[in-house]
Structures are given as C-alpha cells and as structure tokens.
Image (cartoon, rainbow over the protein chains, first blue to last red):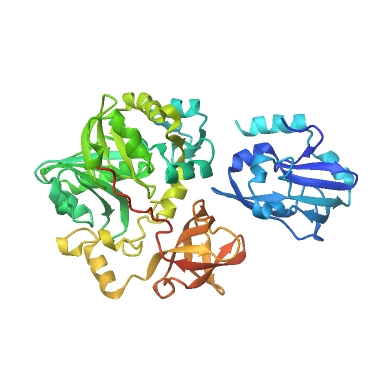
Length: 128
Length: 369
C-alpha cells in the first residue's frame, strides 16, 4: 500500500512532511523496479537544493538511477545507516530506508506533488 | 527498438506463473529476476539455480565437409574434439572480429551441434551457410526445435541424478551425453555460464515446461533470471557478446588467447591473429575493481586527462565479493594488474584498478563418482 500520509514525485521519490522538514526516499514501486540496491549516494548535510535538482543516485545490481529533489531546501540529515545496509531501501522504503531530510524553503511545493491515489494511478499507467 | 512483438520461449507462461519480472532482452521476453538478483546469485553459488536459456540458438553442421567448414570458420581447433565433447570457440570474420562466440558439440565425426547467442542466431546461420557454399555439408538452423534449461550450482548433479539413468558423474566438465531426463530425450551437457558446476539440457520445446517445474520441485533449485546470469558470468569472467566482444574485437584483444590455435591451419582472421600474437594486440580486455565508490558500467569511458583511452564493457556489483567489478578495454601498456585508471561515471572521474581474473573461481570439487 502506498502510504496516504506522504506525497509523490513523478520520478518516484516520496516526501513525508513533518512541520517544515521533508523526509525523502524512493517508493516501494521504485525499489521493486530497481531491484537489489547496493548503494545510495546523497549530498552532504548543509547542501542547498532546488526542486528537481539531482539529489543523488541509487545503484542497484543491474542499473543506476538518479534521484531528484522533490522540494527545495537544505539537507539537514542523511540516513547514515544506508552506507552499511543499502538493502533497507528494498526492505523498508518508507521507514528505515529513507534517504535525506530537507528543511523546506517553500513548503507550498509539496502541493504540486501527487497524493497516494494519484501516484498509484500514475504507476499503473507507467507499467503498462 | 522495433515494433515487432517480443519472441517468447516455451517457458514464458511458466515464468509468468512463477512471478518472473519480464523484460525485453534483444527481442525476447525473458525474466530478469524472480525473487531478486542477490538471492538468485547466492542460490547458484551455494545450492542450485535453474535458468531458461531457450532463446539461445542451435545450428547443426553435418556432412563429410563439416569439420573442414568449422575449422575454416572458427579459431579453436575443432579437430581436437571427440564424440561426447564440447568446446568454446569463436566464429570469426576475416578481420578476426567475432561473428559470435559459440559452443561446438561433436555428436559424430561428421555431425556437429553449434550453440550460438540468441541475437546472433540468424546472422550466424547465414554466415555459416555462406561459408559452406560449394562444400559437401548441410547447415541447418534448429533453434526452434530446442528448449534449453541450465541447472547450475554445487547441488546440480544431486538434483538431476534421480531424474535420469545416465550416470552424471561420468560426464566431466565440457562433456555431454544423450539420455532421458524424467522420460524426456535430452542432450545432457556439463557446461554453463555461471562459473559453477552444472548442466545444460537441450530438450524438445513441448516438454520443457513440465521439466522446468519438475526440476524446481521440492525447492532444491530456485528459478533464476537474466540479472543473476549476468552477475554470475561476470564474476567468472565469461564474455558477453554485444558487451565485451563483437565484430570489432579479436579473441586476442578479448584475452581469449586460449581459443586461438593458429597452428591448426588456415581460418578466417588467422593472419590478423598471427600478427597480433607477434606484436601484441593494441588493447586488451581486463578485469577491474572500483577503488572509489561507484560502478563502472557498459559504455562508460576510461580517461587519462582529456584523452579517452578505453571503455568499460561490463560492470556490476559483485554479490560474492561485495564490491564493484567490471571488464574494460585498455591499451596493452596499462593492462597489467595493479594499474589504476579513471572511469568517467556520469561526468565524474572515478578511480579503478586492474585486477587478476577471474574474479571468482569455485573451489574445485570433483563430482562424486
């Protein structure tokens, strides 16, 4: 199930908002498409990002894919656990597999993103 | 790509039923994975995995001139084969570039069974048929008449033996026998593309779905997809046509000198290979591992300052070694183990090092006799 308390980008990142902080990772659909993740590269804490900037990259065994910032702001935390256990992206994408936390400079950007139902419809059409 | 519908192997429905994640692989709909590449890879290294490789092509070469045709068209010495033995070989153009890399099985003195890459099967057949003109030999494309199942891993013999009267222990590496597997006529070949012990079975397409399910019974072998096939073959440094070798690469450049037998007599590309043997090839396929974080993948350039000096042909995360490995063409002088070089990964120079290959070699364990 796609969590209803988060918002989704077309490039398959999710944004879970608490106050002005957005927790970003990739969706369950995305992790399944990628397969076994072997490492995640994300920017350093303190980096300033604009929405749609490249946020990093995810290497799975079979391919690499880019990660995009769904919202603008400053990276205030990165998930250090992924350095040792990148498979958390596969096993718990919405929980322990999160990637970065961004302090948003423009929280209204979240409204541009899809809700769970819209995202499910989007992946449904993309996979056919 | 073309709008042609994807070709399907006789196991397509079984693969859908087993939850295979299907992809377009050179025009064939095949599973890239079932449960996951890492799981499937580990199963083959430690137990057993079952692959559908029915997309591979089969060409028979029969007649009094069969041997001379194959000697002329390939670089390995086909005259060294005996009945019941197979070998790896290169089908070459006069430039010494690969038409394809192939397996040749000797069924009889005038009867050879040639296994070729799926995407090359029509090209190979036409090339061989063309080379055969004027000779007393019949070249036939039998690709549609065979399904191919590869049971790979240390448990392969134990799983397969109860299903056949053929004594599998007597089939050594790169040998084969004809027999019945679960009542089905099969060529049982102790070969594979994983670096592990195992068997490849050539059977009638109509029989293959039942046999595939039978081999999975009891869960001793797990179904595996193309993803694990690629990581397994790369760890064992087995070349992939279209990635590591093609019509522009020679067997000596590809570090396949062991299949080049210039002393056997004339064959297409021999003069080029003799020159390369004397002078050394200009570039060489080497194994590398990443020193910096990243994975050098197929097509990534290798740079020295502003100059492009080579290219990555295959790269992945090695599930066994748990590091990034790959194959690349480098100038001969930079191809010795320990040399470092820079791979351009999405615009960023990333350090890698030439290492000895294969990356993985199974501990030699003679099959129980």
